[in-house]
Image (cartoon, rainbow, N blue to C red):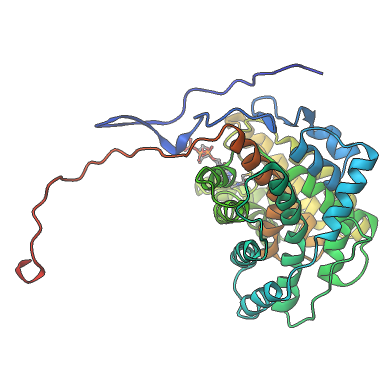
Amino acid sequence: MESVKKVEISTSGKVIESPCGPIIHGLEDVLIKVTSISDIDGRKGILWYRGYRIEDLAKYSNFEETAYLVLYGKLPTKSELSEFSEKLAANRDLPEEVYSIIRVLAENKVHPMLVLESPVSALAGFDPKAGDLSKDALYDQAIRLAAVFPTIIAAHYRFSRGLGIIRPRRDLSHSANFLYMMFGSIPDEVSTRAIDLYLVLHIDHEVPASTFATHVAISTWTDLYSAIVAGIAALKGPLHGGANEAAMKQYLEIGNPSNARPYVEKLLAEGKRLMGVGHRVYKTYDPRARIYKDLVKELSEKKGNMTYYQIAEEVEKVVLEKLAPKSLYPNIDFWSGIAMYLLGIPYEYYTPIFAMSRVVGWSAHAIEYLNEHRLFRPRACYVGPHDVQYVPIDQRK
Ligand code: ACO
């Protein structure tokens, strides 16, 4: 085990000169806190959760165990894991009123990512301890939040299609229960693993925009539910959570492996971006993408549909040839949309499933930040006029 390891962070953040001094545009490379939750080496392509390499967790762990690790900072013992898993399972169902909120919005075709915000904030109203920022209350809320995300997403899927909802089962794993609530049958092993591995790979990623938004909200001593809503709102944007859907649409447009090279070459010649490629931090192959690629291959074989895996492999060849010299490599979204597609999950649920995993990281960071808490309150450089004279409306030109 390595002790405290400092991953080098470039100080070449984009600086804009202003009359009040330099502005670090987009807070690129600005440190906002110390953390022991996750770390990324973007040059070497390494991701750690609580010091454990993502490759080991992908191989040996599952969602429940990794969620425990991220929240509590250590791997659970057998009894700790079974208590944690039972608590998650016991918290899966929603109050009837919350199902009603989801039904009204889903039947009116409101996007599931928008719908996710409403039941999460409504759930605070059903928790008498919602504003309690003590450790015990926060951990209970973090578990409840992680437990209900699959239920909210599956309920949206079913309501929006005029199907009756399927209540969660306590005897299934987090991932198997999610697919069961979506489609009504107990999923096979590889389908469950496809969801579970996706969740393990997305649980935390240091402080991207959504995790930062959660910090800003919790720094005001708001409740955890509201801080999670801030995270969902930031994740929804296409520059953050939406690329897996865009990458899959690309493969569908390509249609077959022999079209891949001309498609990519034309797109790049037109100066357009290839979805699922590039990353603000990784300047090499995203380690999550490397791991998920193998799963997508296995799932494609099991489902008897290799087309999209083969298209992606052809696209990858061109990326490694033409974009890798600019430090642009496939990211996790390059592969993950294919798995969701093969599982029969419609595009609009890809980002909510990302949130279903990241809610654990958001909660862990919010709890961590409250230890060393300070209100986020940056400044802006005002460049407008001062002391302008107020003119009554009937005298304005
Ligand atoms: N395809 C082609 N060229 C690209 C791509 C791409 N996907 N991404 C970046 N570039 C090029 C840019 O055109 C630019 O070229 P130039 O220097 O010749 O002008 C150069 O690489 C640097 O681009 P920036 O936008 O400055 O890089 P940034 O670090 O801000 O971008 C981002 C990161 C937003 C992820 C970008 O690579 C992108 O748009 N990728 C496609 C969307 C995507 O896959 N997002 C998922 C990220 S992973 C996740 O959120 C789970």
